[in-house]
Amino acid sequence: MNIKPFPLSISPWFSSSAGRSLLLALLCHTSVDPARADERMFTYSYQADSILPKGGLEFEQWITHKNGKEDGVFSRWDLREEIEYGLTERLSSALYLNLRNTHSDGVPALADADRFEFKGVSSEWKYQILNPNTKPIGLLLYGEATYDGEEFGLEEKLVLSKNIG
View 1 (cartoon, one colour):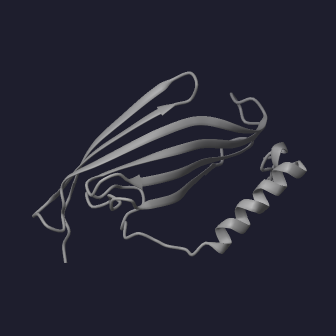
View 2 (cartoon, helix red, strand yellow; view 1 turned 120 degrees about the horizontal axis):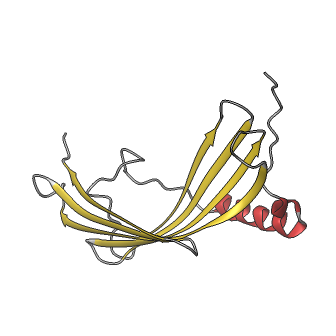
View 3 (cartoon, helix red, strand yellow; view 1 turned 45 degrees about the horizontal axis):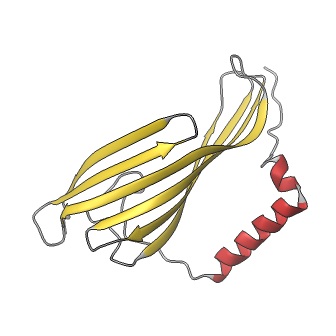
């Protein structure tokens, strides 16, 4: 088995002075603002009370790493930048910017690659029908549309939840 060191490559874009300056500005901006966390108990699932209050604004980053193949070197980072806004006490909407960084070297059936890609935009809508804090159960309608320049995707969910304790 030929083991190769994993190269840490963000993108040629970030090797430019403009890219480094933008990254530094973003890091400085996020370090100055106070941190805040919501009460979402499970990060990969939704709860019926996950609606922002009217006028509430939230920025959230999703970072998912996938690595390893049987042969070769493979690493993929999926990045989603979200801005969510509470339109009413029961309705909130969010916009996502979807990005991907992929590195593959010597993986069968995959071309060798080291690239940073734009993977589209998404629009999320959540409408709370029943609040689990004031009703026996919570009920939420969820919809998300995604477009990447070629394909359009639609995701719908009916979320039921019960607060215990």
